Image 1 (tube, rainbow, N blue to C red):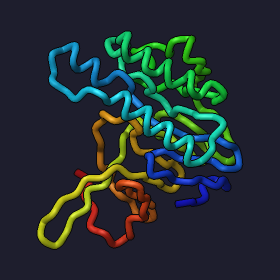
Image 2: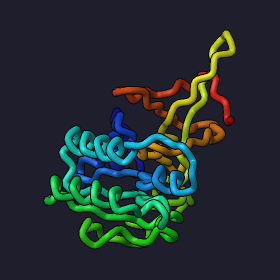
Image 3: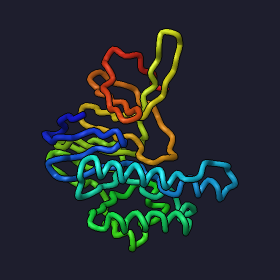
Length: 222
């Protein structure tokens, strides 16, 4: 699925990421690496293997678009408690397999608590916004005059309703008039269904498909 935002081509990927083909940039929001490990430190029984799942999705996204540079739109690491040795080592092994790939992190609110990633990951860390063409890349989805903002932070989803009172919650891309929000990339993240304003464009992610949500579809902000 390819659309235009801020005069820039943006390709929406089923891996819950976006690719800017004119710039070779893969945009990833809210990976939250180490979140499950952080929960387990508090004795919460959550699934294992979430970091491996997130990294496998990242590998698939890179392969799908041939990106040369990955820009993380904040919250790469979840918390300081999630910086477990096995989690960090797993990412380090992934980094070694993609040694030629350039990585940039636009710091988000969780990165402020977790700290910048280990130097061995070779991630350039900056504060937003980062300007690319007519776009401004940020973590928080705040408008910026003269630019179309692409951000994360909210973990957008859509709740679709059917005639028999069915409810289906799926991650989505949510594009407003001047701000667009990418779905959370991480394997272990929550979601939030934003209100749909007139003119907003929603693209739902399900399996290996990205599909536009028709304006007349029954969508709930819950």
